[in-house]
Image (cartoon, rainbow, N blue to C red; front, side, top):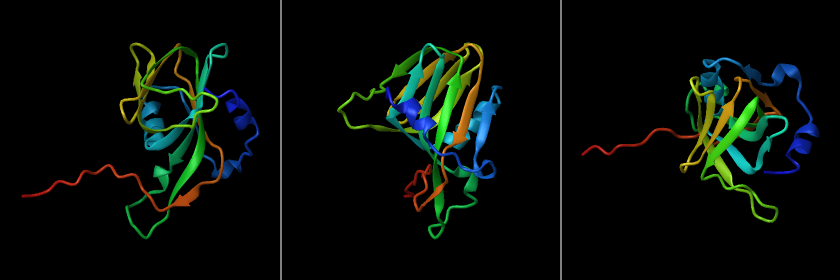
Amino acid sequence: MSEYFPEKLKNRPLISADKVLSLRCEKDQDIKVISSLLQDSLVSNADIYFEKTEKTFAFIANRFCWEKVSSKNPETSYYRVLSGINVQNVISIKQKNLIQKKNNEAALFYNLLTIEYDIVFNEITLVFSQGISVKLNVSQLNIFIRDLGEPYPTKQIPDHFVESSEE
């Protein structure tokens, strides 16, 4: 986990409130909204932070702006934006296959597929590609997501469709 992560968030200029996505998730049905907005985000292992004394788990995601997509068109520009995600009331964390960044190692990027919430056990699970997951046990559901900059254009759109060959 990066020691400089909190400083990166503090020093980041905020964009005007009318252009920023800023949401709070406190109910189990809110997880679906947060999950859909963060689907296909790229998360660096250098930008994942857990502050045990504050009971906070946070990360920066390079989020694909699904809310700006009306159709798939190769002539269209799509958008990505850096977003800060903060999960509060974290009691414990379990991770599977996540490689934590060490000082001199290159950062790795993980593709966030979905976020799940188990209301019975109060567990939030971040599911990444390649069998990687982070499970957060929380005392109460409380997640914040806020865009940290202006969306920037990209021509690439994540593709969830598998082509089948007809014989």
